[in-house]
Length: 306
Ligand code: ADP
Ligand code: MG
Image (cartoon, rainbow, N blue to C red; front, side, top):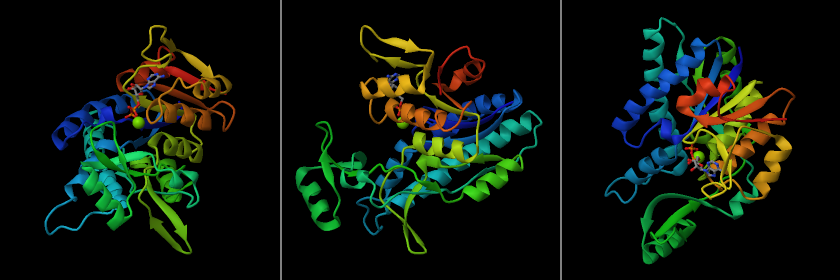
């Protein structure tokens, strides 16, 4: 039996509320299988499409004030957490496992002087014309960039997660055997300002926040569930090769050689390096949702260990 932090990718969630409600049933089924196999799991998840959708819903709406980005992140944690909580409870009840499930609104501290803030890279929200983009950067101080020929978009920083604010309550619930959903969307980014924790417009990578969470909980395994069953080198090229296992040194080397696309596979490998090098015996497995059980049994997925 292992303690496993499971980081769910966007594909486990779907795009609209209806799609998401259907997707989480399947997700809950796979996750409860892991519990039935005797593992202790803690769940984290992404929020890219969802936070974008929430942000859009409050943009350019007559008579409705724009929703600040950290608040959009908080809403996405509630919305996704609700669906996961609901679906997991149902699956647990069906299998006569009386485990309480709770999604925790989670703040994650980032450094105000993180270099990411001087070089925002993560596009969020809707597309604008050049004129609108110029006006937004003048009036609101937003950083706007052209996004692959589709128009201008706001970009925010993607800073490194330093500390999980709700760590004590997360630990307490996990130790008490409860099923916890936390660090949704990488957590709501906050910076310290005296006694205050101030929300900032930024996006923390959920893979990196999950690695932090796994270290905090002294997990044995970080299980990153995404679209692909394995990590590849020479991805989408003729000489593409799927990898079964890597050690941290090899992972670092391949990462530096540019085998993992920034913003998708690269943060997963970085999270794997962070977690797997943090203590002997810890490992990270990257695979797809449907292959979680098989990957834990060593039959598929890419395993990264020290
Ligand atoms: P998630 O929502 O799970 O975080 P992402 O889209 O961010 O998913 O990242 C997973 C994607 O990374 C895969 O679907 C794949 O297209 C892409 N990817 C980039 N580089 C690689 C690689 N070297 N090996 C496998 N997949 C890769
Ligand atoms: Mg991702």
